[in-house]
Image 1 (cartoon, rainbow, N blue to C red):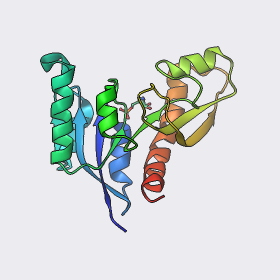
Image 2: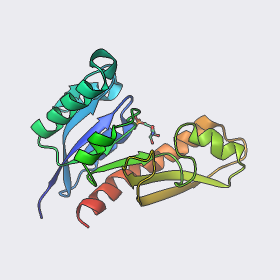
Image 3: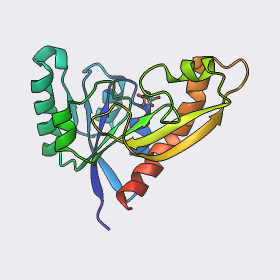
Length: 186
Ligand code: GRF
């Protein structure tokens, strides 16, 4: 079985990226970590691990030039698949088309519920009994592609968006490496 080369895209802390690296099996290898925020905390850790990194701010060069440079860096590093992990920029339709069916994302809700931002506050406000996270294929529609796997947690009385986010994040860290490996060896 061939190991798939994966590029991980982050914007900040990068805890899901760390979990993908730490839990990689023979199914995949993280060959590059890229960020639209050069100050992303996760980049520091990736560099310490000796993982090649790429960072460029779209604000510096414009979205088109940013995505062209990102695409070139990912291919240069040998990435065949992309895993978005707290990547907070929308990828253009062109970019998604060039990586068609080779990009996945983790989203902190039980999709199709609560696409977009503030998922935990919205789940609490709705009075939901449970929340969770979803790994899905990235398409041109925000948080809209086929769901590959989900994990559920209870919403407890007294939960704030922060306490719920922490409970969901623990599940994200377990779910993402497992679903990525399963998807790549499907
Ligand atoms: C995660 O909850 C992810 O699902 C969401 O943003 C958070 C990123 O956290 N979209 P991290 O950067 O992986 O630590």
